[in-house]
Image 1 (spheres, one colour):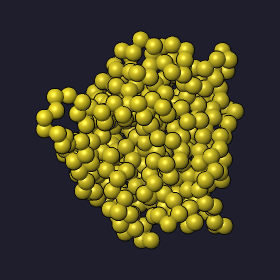
Image 2 (tube, helix red, strand yellow):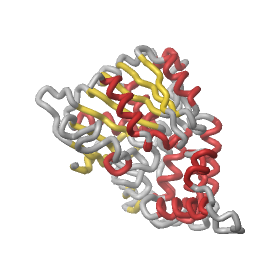
Image 3 (cartoon, rainbow, N blue to C red):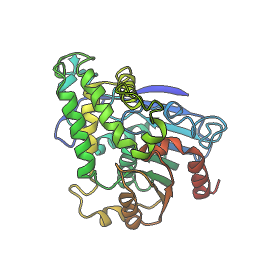
Image 4 (cartoon, rainbow, N blue to C red):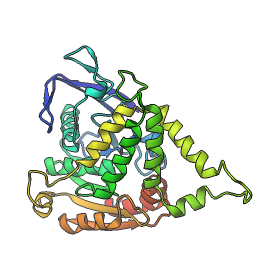
Length: 338
C-alpha cells in the first residue's frame, strides 16, 4: 500500500458558494496499473472510514482476497471534510493561517466528487474497470458516475440511495445534537466535542445494526443483573474507540453532507438523471438494513439502465456489507465474471 497526499493548488468552488483556495487529497493505492490500464478498481469509503480499505474491509481487500492488489490497481481516496488527510476542519485555513475547526464550510457529496475527479486525472486513469461504494461511499460513487459516465465499466452501489431519507436525516440530526450538547464543541481544539461525539456514535451504531443483531452479540448471560449490561458497555466502548481516531468537527460536517445527498438537486427527476449512466450496474441491498432499506436500492435498480438488483441476507443490518464477505465475493464474481 502507498498512502499519499495530492495537493491541488487551484481553487475549487463548493456548492454552498464558498471557495477553497486549495485542497489536499489523501489517497491510497494498492498494486500496479497494467500496461493497457484495464485493471483499475476504485473504492469509495463510507462515513468515518479512511483511504485504506485493508483496514476497514479486511475480508475483501488484500492479497488472496477478491480485490487482490496482485491482480488489480486499487485506488481509494479519503473524502473531503474528513480528518484523515484530505482537507477538512483540521486543515489550515489559508486566509487565517489557523485550522478551520468550526469555520469549515458546508460540503456536499458533489463537492467530494470534484476531488475524486482531480485525483483520477492526476493518476492518469481513463477507464475504471470496477468501482464500488457502500452507504455514503455509494452516494459518492453514484455522483461520480453521473458526473463522469464514460469512465466506468462496472460498478457496485451497495446499501445506498438516490436521496438521503428523512429517517436517515433524523438519525444524523440526533447525532449532531449530541455533539452540540458537549460544551467544548465550538472550541478551537482538535479535541473539541469528543464526549458529544461518543454519544453520537452510540446513536449511529443503533441505526447501523438492528434488534436481532444486538440479541446475537449483546445478549446478557446473567439474568440476575440490575445494571452494567453488555449492551451498555458495548455502546460506550464503540464511542471511546471512535474518539481515539476521529474528530467531532469532521463528524458534524460529514453527517450534513450525507443529509444533502440528492442526485436530483438542480438537475430534474431521478429517472432522467440516471438515464445518463452507461456502465453495468449491480445494486446491492441488505435484508435487515433499517437505515438504507431495500426499497431504496430497488428504486435505484428500476431507474438505472443496465442494472440488476441483488440482496445479501444478513442479521447485521446496514453493517452487513462489512461482515458478509463470502456472500459478497460470490455476488461480485458472478457480476464481473472473474
